[in-house]
Amino acid sequence: MLSKKKKILIIGAAGGLARILTSILSKRNPDDEIIGVDSRPQSEEFKRDNVQFLKIKYTRGNFEKLFRDNEFYAVYHLARMSHAYSNKSNLAQRLDLNIMGTSRILELALKFHVKKMIILSTYHVYGALSDNSTFLKEDAPLKASINHPELRDVTEMDQLATNWMWKNQHRIETVVLRPCSIIGPQIRNSMSQYLTTKYVPLGIDYNPMFQFIHEFDMANILSKSLDEIPTGIYNVAPDEVVSLRKAKELIGLPSLRLPLITLTPMTLAVKKIWNFPDYLIEYIKFSCIIDNTELKKHLKKDFLRFSTKEALELLKLKL
Image (tube, one colour):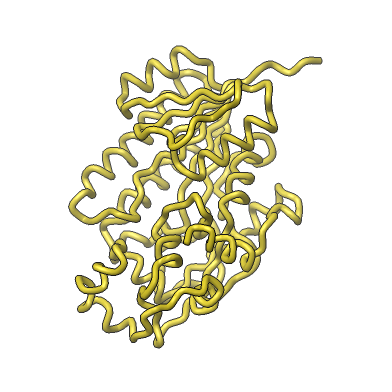
């Protein structure tokens, strides 16, 4: 029996992770039609017949028309305004895009009978705090915005998505993914920038443990979320952990060794070398390690292609 052709929407399709996901889905499901949208232009055109890219403004009217004109089977919501180059002054803009934008998309998904919603959140929602437990489970409190109000949009977007997910679990399947630090040549998040920048601060008084996942592995898990992962919240991370010093050593770039307790007074000077969001200081001081037990219940043991060491060494391709 022939399967019905599906339409899949990817919001935030110009991003590096979304482009890898589009490539995987278009090859794995050649009969499905993939429509990618973004407010940014795509860096390179996809040369596959089942992929269409649309550059649109993220307005309710544009999304309403998009959902009305297409009977989407699944929607990937990967469009979140990055904190890599953000600051407190554009918090209102991020709140509008990340919170209000997400709310509109969820409302339209329900209205137009989408079968599956896949939302990309982040492990940052837990916060990097000195009293964090060793492996944080999905039901751990989201403390990111306690010390850093600029992360309010991240935590509120996650809470909005998870509350909506449980409220509508009998009407639509929803998966919320909270990945650890995603790294790779096509990723431009704050941790990738930190790892690939010379003379960034590296503490002599702190050496937190980290989890890293390669961009291809993360895109592959996103693709598997379509059919293999049921409704729920899932931490995404490898079993391996590595210290920040070891990670920097594997990348092989020189660092500025100093007590991180002195970093806050030196922030303006350091930002001339490394333009980082303020909250990241906490993540290079305190560990935020997440538990991946729930995800592994639905994926094979070898669901990751790249080890932590390989992912870090491949990051050198950005240099």
